[in-house]
Length: 251
Image (cartoon, rainbow, N blue to C red; front, side, top):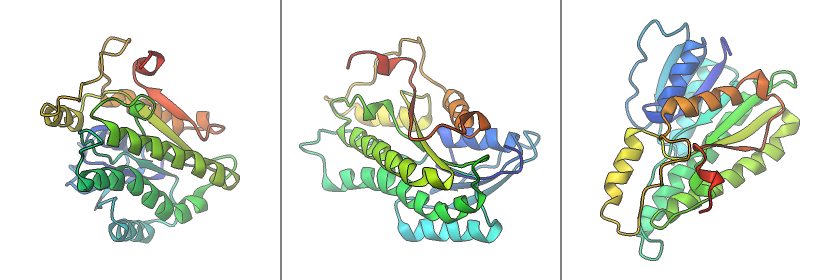
């Protein structure tokens, strides 16, 4: 993947930050988008370059501005990796409209807006022998929702169907679209969500996965890295669980 230009949203932490680190180590030029400040990756990890950009993925003006800046820096993109996302717990029957709307705006509208803005640049890089890529971060919750997590689960189910539609539309243009679906991952994002959920009697954290441990960000980044590689040149429209076996169990 050396010298490729790749956008990573949610680059300030968690899975997004892990992806940025892996891509920089491989020599990529990475455009890191986040609403939060993005810390520099320690020197010596690789020959890649990080260009941090402030972006609220839920807002079309913010996304347009970020991709306008990217378009001034490069005439093509080889991949878009959408890692931005939020979790809000609560019963569907009593959840505030604003909370539901915020979850959908970040988790569904955000990746869609970024994909739309990235398409012209992705199309310039895509060839049949070296396709461009779009990768979304879904969740095992899209398949197995739980009480108290209905809005998040619905947002990820919607995202997976956007992924499938884009995969079918873009395959003839040599742009591959896939999703990775983690279970619980040891990130500050998830830890805070679990803390916030303690006030919600309905919400229960996922059971320990059959593999015996919670995922770390590197487990997820490794699968994303494979989907960006030439080994996945014939892979599109798929959802790839990285959940330690949770989705193999009954709900």
